[in-house]
Image (cartoon, rainbow, N blue to C red; front, top):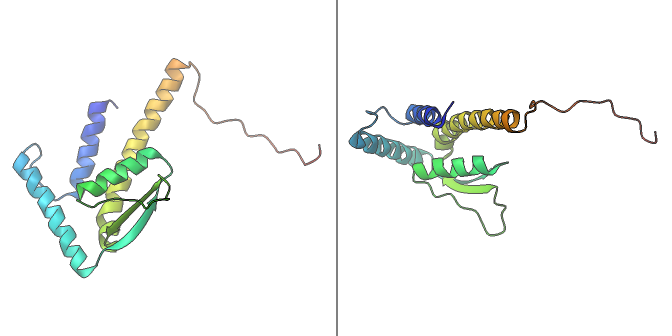
Length: 144
């Protein structure tokens, strides 16, 4: 998958989580975003925002999650002293469960698959070796 194909796939995933709109039209894109923000506001009336703490194992996931938050005009933050892997956000549980987290997971899965593919290809082409797991050996008993 090349960069263009990856971007197209990510856009299609994003479109699944936004209300239908004519792709490529600025007005339609703006209306789709407005619908998402209205939906968020409606959810927050019945389900008030609470503070969530999200922790990510890698910078790619962290950056992607912050971008998805900002797309919905949420303001990700972290407290002084918290690790860089932590992202805090005030958002309703329903919105996290129904929209924010499922969209992040779908985008993350696609991006991770692409990064894994690129990594394997670079290892094989540049280092001219197979990208395979390390050999598993039986552990020796202590003292031998």
